[in-house]
Length: 363
Image 1 (cartoon, rainbow, N blue to C red):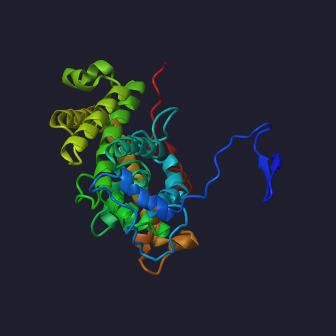
Image 2 (tube, helix red, strand yellow):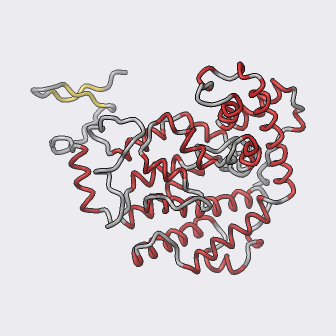
Image 3 (cartoon, helix red, strand yellow):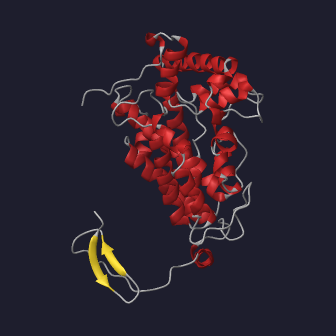
């Protein structure tokens, strides 16, 4: 249990994880953060965000000896409770069945698309990944219906992007570049301050348009042949080909023009796919009914906690905000299952009126 005995040297005795292990590297001093930051000049494109000179935080911190400021942020997000809770939050279908996406798998797929483009085009990969992993940490339970549910209680409405940066992730003391990318990843928000933030906004749309369609196909809601012929001819009927086409277009456009964008033809196809998803998946009668059920449950929970603030966990109460704001923040952080169970336990909510998932079509 303590590892396998390895060679002895003048300075230390080494143990291996595996019997007979012994991969060897040439001896060299560890690379410092400063050396690695200097190395960014060798591979980052002009205009890409450098870690050196960046990384301002709300509360000043000593730099990490090995990680850049953006690598540190990426790691903090990965280990955060807000990120873990995405595993229990709706992407499209509540109570996702086997293989259906959650907000967590969506964030991972966004990060994969975004970092693929960032590596190819010389953008800051660590910053890109941090924004992508954190971009949906402000989502409430039940998908986008949570924004409709919680907006009446907030002076400026509830925006998951703003809530993510300003509430859900605030305890991590992230850099302003990462928070800005999270806050402004939605296309309806102002443009992010970094090219990496703009890239994540594209990656988000590419990822969810393709994987939401795939989930709907596997659930039997739509078929490949339902997809308009123009889209099938341009990017194919399946997620792998669609993402390959969108990533290639982003890489080509960015490398040839220096603009964080997509070629007009492919951008049009992406928009048409998104419109198809809205009409055939997100706005179908069953989905609308699911959204109404989510709204009813979440509003009832917010009002219950606002009238009974003593039910809030102690660390969720704050003298900086009133009881209603604290209730909204607590409910917004819930997973689907936690929220629906709380409604049944605290409000005697009828189980048959809870949001319902959808089973996968037989394979």
